[in-house]
Length: 294
Image (cartoon, rainbow, N blue to C red):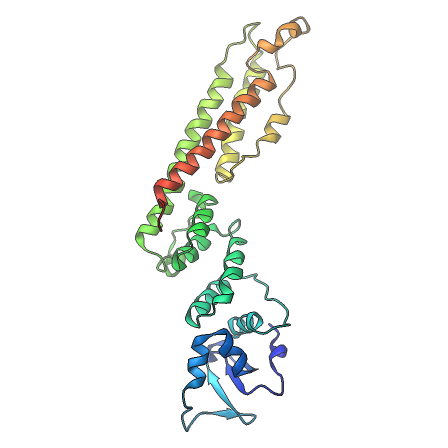
């Protein structure tokens, strides 16, 4: 935090952050600038000041319930020519959304919503809570897509955050991620069985070859479990490991190897169908969970 930007000598008001921060944090500001940015500040400054209004440096002090970090970022949005705020803490971002709503600073909303999306990969559950709290449908959907059953920490430590959303919103998320994983894993199992159980028209493949192809299913299951929300699952590493010609083929089989179901091109085609199926499952379940309205 760098409140030095808000210590200009011609400021006519001191904003004092919440004393819960442990020490006084004052921001010397201009009423006109704040009034132009926020109708709430405008109304606040238009009221006659009480006779016991505290002063410092000969100007009034306005006590606010917000933390110094939140006030600092708010002022960075409001004041022209000031270094743009940086968002590294989701808790602060959530407090900023509350402050933007409280002070009705409409200009902050687009940047705050964009910043919220950057936390989705690492904290999808918390982003979902924030998005639901402020009615951000697209952000809530994106957070749901990035969530897994293991990323929804329904422990006592998260009780306070969970209270910020309704039971319906929580149910939607839990239902979506669990149903998507169940259906997704079932489709991957089918894909794996197609590979493992497909008979070769030329000869039976060697045991180690069968084991190798059977293990593809487990690799794909691991990747899907880790990142089920990707719209184009990156199975390329698995495909790169496919032997060409397939394991078990012999030199005399090469003229007919294209008939083998374990030919990489065949597996690649089936995998493309699987990816399309998984994406379709995610899209359909998302519509069922959230519908057109939030």
